[in-house]
Length: 335
Image 1: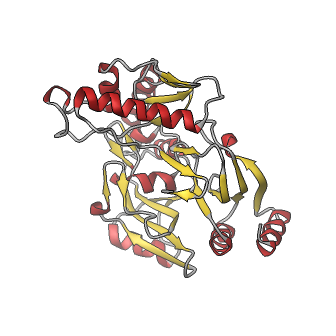
Image 2: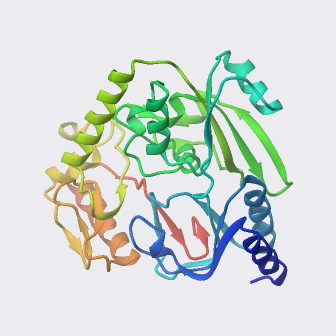
């Protein structure tokens, strides 16, 4: 590790502003429970420390920023660089009036009297619970997604007919290349199904601003409980996984009998539930969940199982499944 970077991390850790580990197992931070060791793993505790850590890491070599790692599959060989986690950045507040230039722009742009401001590391269930507590509607579908706000914006995460971009007004990002913080007003054109333009230019999310529209608290609670019950009944809760592994296919793709069906339904129809490669297995409860059934599965086994599923599904349906889960190579994304 770069000596100056190590000195900085040590100094900030001594001040209580971050926690870092060398040679840290990524299986400990992944919901899949899979992954080798990262050269450095860092958890900043405040915005300024987070920005400085990202900026210095970008200068010193390879780095990635992660949230809850609930949609990631780490390489068995680990990551040859710095992994920066946002999970300690959890500020969440209801703004009734602007206190800064950025907040003023947000209030002016959406003409609302109330805004939810969430740090990038806030978990979506916490955001949903905060909205319920304050009688705010629109976040019920996020109640069971084990992702952070920052990661969810990059993927436009959603469930039960809700996407995180639905209530988004604006977001703040940091560009380490030029040490610049920028407020971006949300544009619906930037977001589509499990896809967004956020993070595509090397920027990382700092905060997100959401509309805080009043709703009926009893109805909000009822919808949340209904969503939680459905998840409990239909998904392999308690198993190590990264959630839905494949995206929902385009409705115009494939043979007519399979169009409009979800990836899980298609995998089930193809008789693939329970199929395994080593310790990686397709859940018997939900076809679109690839699980680490014993806690000892490897990334290679998961990738091999995913390829087997894609080939079998294409042969039967002429549908090419596309991964929703992102594989993080030891040398970085997309390698």
